[in-house]
Each structure stands twice: as structure tokens, then as C-alpha cells.
Length: 123
Image (tube, rainbow, N blue to C red; front, side, top):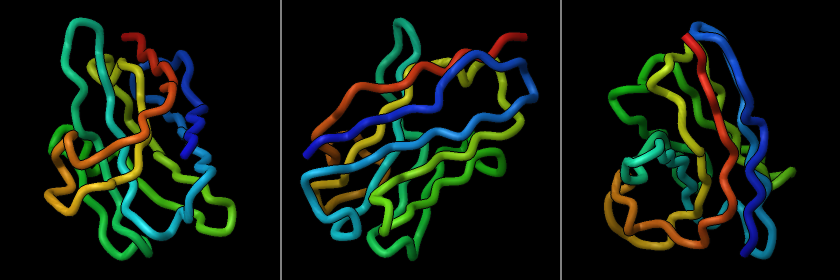
């Protein structure tokens, strides 16, 4: 399984970015997918997730109402639309497939971490 995240960059507070994550080496629609982020000096934290078949989405409280997760099975691509960005959203963002059967919010349920994409929000 390989994952390639892209779409990060520098944006002013209040701006928007759209992250993409291309998945290869597995059937994209077979499992749920998640976005996590890691700010300097902090642990990697859950941002959003989507169940297989895109039936259900999950969000961290800190991004609820601002971020939207979606997937395109034909393109085997996961997206994260980020609006109303805040400086505290600055982090490296990672995508990962959910390989465990437990809670979508727990990092230990995800594997095959690829390289992330850096999002920097200036005030």
C-alpha cells in the first residue's frame, strides 16, 4: 500500500486548501480512510475519517464545520477540504487507511502511513 498526500502550502488565516491523497496497492473502497495531523512538538492527532463506501464521516471537534472529508473511488483518492483555516491548523497532514476494526478516532486503528503534506496558516 502506498499513499501520496499533496495539496499543502502556505495560506492566510481564513483561507482554504484542499488536500488530496492518492492510494495505490489496495482496493480504495474496501476500508475506511482517515486524515491525521502533527504539529511541531505535538503528537499526531485525528482530524477526519470516512467509512468504506463513504457512508459515514467523522470529525475532530476542532475542525467540525470547517473541514470536509470525501473520497473518489474511481480515482482512488481521498480529499480533505479545509475552509476557515486558523493558525492552529498548522501541521503536517497525513492520510492512512483504517486497518483495524475499532474506533475511527484512534490512531492505532490506522496503518501504512505515507509522507504527509505541510499546511502552514499565517495569522
